[in-house]
Image 1 (cartoon, rainbow, N blue to C red):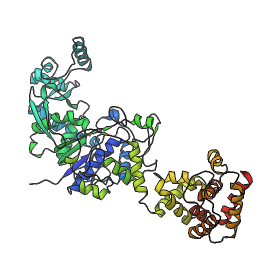
Image 2 (image 1 turned 90 degrees about the horizontal axis):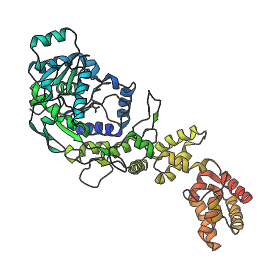
Image 3 (image 1 turned 180 degrees about the vertical axis):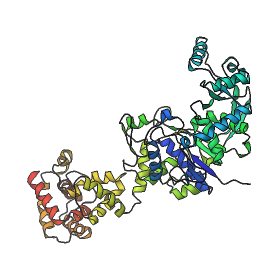
Image 4 (image 1 turned 90 degrees about the vertical axis):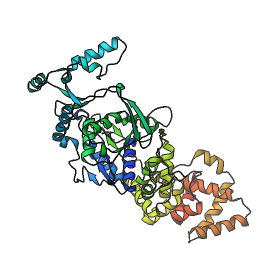
Length: 506
Ligand code: GLU
């Protein structure tokens, strides 16, 4: 019987969710939607030493901002809960014991000092210590003890861990949806700890048990987990769950914009782009990390950008709505190689989305920025400005920065532009223009354009000879949209005031 597709995003709450983590969540989400399946959120918080307060809320809020709706899991509930591993603590031990009983795992009583001594001893020989089929024979574990002795140690409260008994010299041929066949030799792997005497499972045990109990059909996660794949597959085998083992897909790394290696949070700081979806304040250091949200990205643009980091649909299409992504997405089209993060491309995506937004939606955002700067303006004016300025903006803040002259007369004039465009001959021309503008009442684009163009033509003046100094007077620099648009927005009174001031000052 075909099983219903069920995938999970299983972050550990050890800090803010990095770009790569969001992309993992996104690919899980898209895969679930494409296949009519469920998208689960499970919090893997078995490692209490790495727990960061606030991280879980941050993860949930970030997914929400990105529009990745959780079907089941922490914060929404579901049939297979609880979805926070710390709340499932009680159920893992029986599984660890099951493996001990079936001979796939064993107790190890080695003290940290003993293990450290082994490590040192190996080091002096130029070797690395691994707890495996060779070394386990000489270590303090239940494989080398009588049952009674083991029992006694356990009863005496001797600290122990339960380790997986990694088979010796077995060549595993495993399937990864993205990479195809991946081979591992078990003799290179160690006897990983599955369960600790503090009653907590390790990631490996909890992850496999939960995927099994939550009926996960596909495990889609970052490449850094590929080395754990053989252990996980062997765990399924040891539990006798092979027939319901999920399929695995390990996503390629997101690489630094330049140089080698994985994109790190420090790269963002160094190069001035966020690596987190939303702003995050590290509760320990107080350090504040930038977020895409606060930097003015639209969630759709952020998601679209992420989707193309390591995936495409086989065509040149780059702009995808969430719905199109859900339709087009397949794991087979995810690349094997890492994908380089390009902060400029991220801005380009935002621009692409910004220009499709209605002027009124943009005006809402711009108005907030204006108010934060103590600027009051009417909605229609703000909308008009958004319409005029959006083609050149990546962010609404760009619109704000480039359109201040709509709200405030220039306090100074750009030196270079003034030198270039405000010539001696400009003065009489601007005086003449002033006289014409004074007589006009209808400041609509079409009207001022008609009257001023006619005057320029009749006087046989080049267009630039008039418009350039006029722009310097009104805007304060050689920038901005069409002059007739600008004066329509600021109106007659303000136009005349600014022109007059320029004539007096320059
Ligand atoms: N808790 C692991 C992480 O933080 C999840 C790995 C997996 O998806 O199996 O990445």
